[in-house]
Image 1 (cartoon, rainbow, N blue to C red):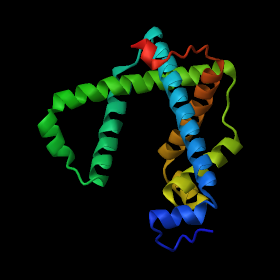
Image 2: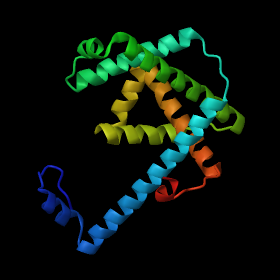
Image 3: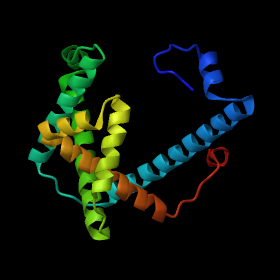
Image 4: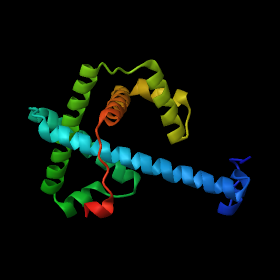
Length: 193
């Protein structure tokens, strides 16, 4: 049993969590296998979406791109501030045009991806259910070390947060469906080179 109020040394934590060396080895093996599976799924999803984005003709209004770029500027400022970095100094160093160009390309990809996911969900009749939202709220509460109630308060105070959660859930469901239905040929990395 692990007491959350005690600062364990790494070896004490291992001893407290695993009754034997075999149990520790088994846990490490499960972790490695799961990490490899997740990495493979991410690669497959990236390939699928790269292909969909490149092969799908979508006209995106410049105002949509500009709105997304502005949101991304805000996200970048917030992320840098949380890391103790100065956004304006970064802009001076990298150059406003370079950063704007990078964010514009990323914004275009984000918008295309969102539109593609939404269309696939509509065509495949993939919906967000109450249980999906409940599971996402629980996941966020664990991730941020808070309660479900606090996450729900944040959702109530920030409609953009609700939209973001819904888009994450829909994206996950569509991506999982695409991975499950993809015809994937795995190639040994040594052979591929």
